[in-house]
Each structure stands twice: as structure tokens, then as C-alpha cells.
Image (tube, rainbow, N blue to C red; front, side):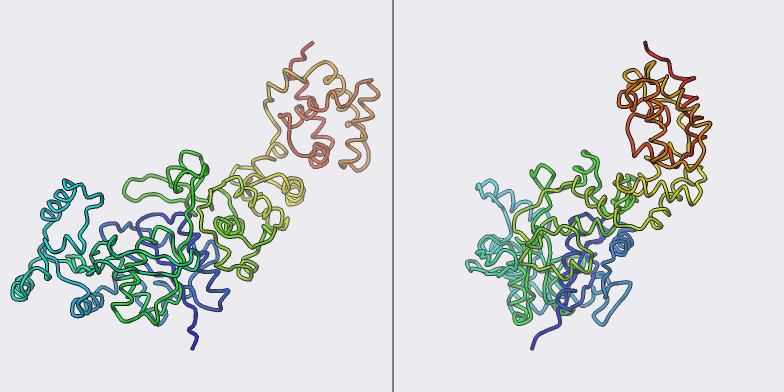
Length: 512
């Protein structure tokens, strides 16, 4: 009988959610939707020493912004709760004790000093990776080397202990990964990981296996960094007797630095000037601020479209997808094994494409809000005209206002580099005559009529328009480049264009 597909995203609340974690959540969401299943979220907060206030709310808000909210979570519980591991603490010990009883785990009473002494001995013996394993455990203080009576005495007295898994000495552990195919690891390379810590909290390894089993998880889609732990998890499923319900694993490729040299980190974003978090984040302990994609002006659908391609491709030339189209197209077998370079230029390209698809009315909301924040009052008609002019030229919604504010607020200074090269007597002659022609202009002043009038004025002065066109732009906008100048003239109106020209003529010095 086929089980309902159930996947989970299981972040730890230790700070802002990294873009790699967001991608993991997205792939889980898409897979669940594609398979008609459910996407869950579980907060893995067993390590209370790393808990950061506000991190859980940050995770929730990030997923909501992107429209990939889970159907079961701490804030929307289902039948498999609680959905925070710290709230599930009482049950983990029984599972650890079950493994001890079956002979697959044991009590270890070693102090931190004894553990350090063991590592120093192994290092001195030139052991490359000193670890607590099938060989070294025979020399340590645990229930495998102590008598049964001594173990009981230590437990009754309340002596601190941990519970470790008993890894077999020489056994091949096989895993059929959905992305990488068969992975085989010999148990001699594994150590006896701690399952229950001395504070009574489970480690990730125990808690995540128990929780996935109890939450009926069918597929575990997670980052490549968990691949070395997968053989241990396979053994835990076997030792618990849960092999028949063990989920299928898929380990995602790394997100790499833009140069491809190593894993993408927050420091890379700080150094190169791009965010690696979905939202702005302020560290509650240090006050350090980190920028987010949302606050930098990325649209959620554009960000998702960019993110999904960091490791996956649809198998054809398509690049733009709605979320619904991504669900339809998504398949795990189209996820690559190799790491993917992070390309912020591509993220900007996606944002530009999605901005172009937005309605003028929606973009006007951004424009008017930014104008008001800057103290400008813009009429609806003028806002609509400016948005239509700028929407094909901008990367972020805020650019609509930032790159066109010169239309609303006349420039008080001018690009001096352009002025030194292009402002001359010919330009001044054409502009002076054009301002006079604008004063007596009758009829509808649109882009076409503005251009015809300018061309006829230059021709009458015996000057080629192309030679002075950049100076004309400079006089009206303050800069040497920008959107279609004749459309700008139409939005400004003939009187305002003439006024700006005369201000430029009185301000700029004509170079002979």
C-alpha cells in the first residue's frame, strides 16, 4: 500500500535562515505539491546553547513571504506534534534506552578530560582522525567495559553520562540516494556518535530519526552536508526495526561562492555586496545587521524562480515559471550532483523580468509610496505615465522613483563631466530657440510633437540635432543618460521644459 508523501523542512533556530536553507525548503515544498503530499516544518532546537531569540519567527516570516508555508508546523499543528523538538524531550530517552536494551547503544561515563586524553593519545600515535569508535571504546569508561553492577551503581548515584550508538566494526552500509544513486560507506570510518547528551536532550541524530518516523516522513530532502551522517541514520532505522518505513533520502548539492571556490557564506555576501538571507536580520546579541532579498527589492516570485535554478533545471530552455508551473515541472531527478555557483546578476535579471509582468496599477503603488517617503506629491496621471516609461528599465521597484525623481523635482545641478564635453554655443543656441518655440506652442504636447518641434528648431539654427542632443538632455534632466527624452518632455509639459532649459542656460557656462 502506497503511503502519503510527507516531507519536512527542519531548520535550527540559531540565526537568520540562509539562502541554502530556503532552497531546501523550496525543493521540499515543490516535491510535496508535485506528489500530492504534505510539506511539514519542524524546529530542531535540541541544542539550547545555540538558540537565538527571534530566529523561529524569522523562519516563519521568510516562508510566508515566499508563499511556501508548511501545512503542519509549530504555528499550524497537525496530528504529529509537537513540532518543536524541545517540546518532545520526554519521549526521546525511551528510544535511546530501547537501543541500549537491544545492544545497539551503551552508556558512556567518560569525563571531558578523559575524552581529551584519548584524543591526545591517538594524535600522538599519528591517527589522522581521533574518534570514539569500535576500537577506542574498549579503552574507555562505558557500559561495554564496566561490570553490570558498576554501571547500575553509577546510574543510581546520578553520575553524568551520555548514550552512544554502538557502530559495528567492519560493515558496509548502503544508501540509495535519489540524487546520487548508491552510496556505500564502511562502518570502520564512523564513530560512536552521542545519541543522548548528559543534559537529557537528544542529539540531532537520534531526534531527527525518531521524529521522522513518528511524523511518517517518506522522503528526506536536505543539504549535502548531511550526507556523511546518512549511514549512521540508516543504521538507526535498522536498529529500531523501522527499515520498512525508512524514508528515501535526497542530498542537495552545495551553493557555491560566485567564483565556485567553496560554500557560499554570509561573509561572501558582505564582501561582494549582495544578501544571503531572505529578509533583513539583526543579531539580537551583537546588533550586527544583515540585508535581505526582500528589503533590497526582490519580488518573491522572482526570488523563487532564481532559487529553484540553483541546482535544478527543467530539461528545456524555459527560465520563467510561476509557482504553480514549478510544481508541475519539478522532479528530483533533474537536480544535479555538483555544486552551483551563486550569480547575483542572474537574480537581478529575474527581478527585472518579473517587474515587467506587473500591472501598471501595482507598480504605481510602489512608485507613489516611495515618492511620498521622499516628500514628493505625485498625481495619479503623472505616476502612471512615469511607471509606463520606467518599468522596462528598472531592476527593483524602488528604482521606479529613484531613477525618475528628476521628472518630479527639477535638477538643481548638472553632471559636470557631461557639461564639460557637450555644453557649447551650438547647444545653447538650439536650446534658447527651443524654449522660445515652446512658449508659443499650441496643441497637444506629446512625445511626437516635442520631437518634431525640437528637430525643426535645430534645423532652423543650422545645427545637426545629434550633435547637441546630450546637452538637451542635460539641460532638462541634469544628467547625460536616461529614459526616452521625448516621453519625459511630454510628461513634464511644454512650460516646464522651457523653464528648465532657461535655468540651465543661466547656470551652465558655455565653453567656446
